[in-house]
Length: 269
Image 1 (tube, rainbow, N blue to C red):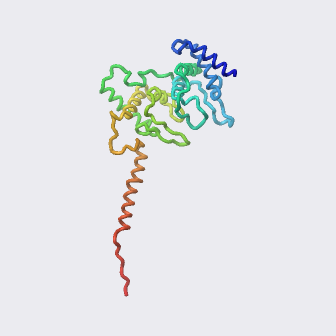
Image 2: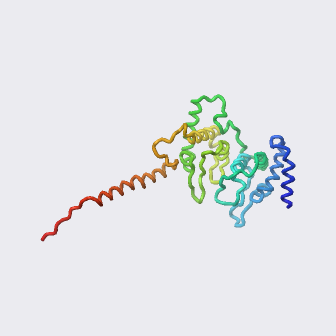
Image 3: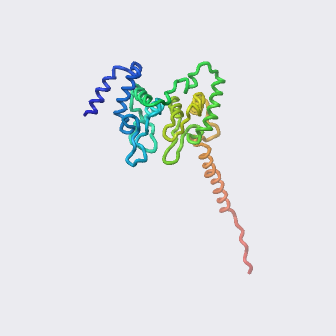
């Protein structure tokens, strides 16, 4: 009852103000109240993290230093709050309004310095003014080279995703917002490595995102070469070629050998 009353009064107290009209201090305070209600069970009352009963794993990691970018990614994709702890947080419907997400991100950013949420010119090639069509194509080509070098081992050569060890998986990138792809590269959620701006510059990340979107747009990049097999990738496609192609030839050769006339040596009288 106390929690319900607190939630009702706290939400009504901030209902008259949107996140744009709140000062930064008010936004952080509103985010702290939401954090205590929805996040503190796993992440601790001050974002310090909570250790599980076995003493080895965490119910929720420390949020100090993850920055607003990590909070935006986890909350806007519905990965947080988790229904239950597991190998990986799946994408699901968003539990908070945009104002609540912004307030929670502001509070998480206040815990310690960390990556801030990116601007449109950082993750969207179309938002950059003055780029010609040739320059955009060159950026997509650069992004493709970077993607093939750094991302295909997990996400497949066209971003279709795939299974990974220990019950984890690389999610497909089709239909994912450009800002969320950028924030994932910047913060490294779950098993994904962190590609900081020192490793991949903002321009590199933007070019990778442009390549991903160009691959997903089949009107611009049709699937050449017969059956696409849903973009399973060269390893899976090679396995299929061996099992179906070579296996079919072996089976056909066996069938030929089994149905040909055989000569029998006559026994001497």
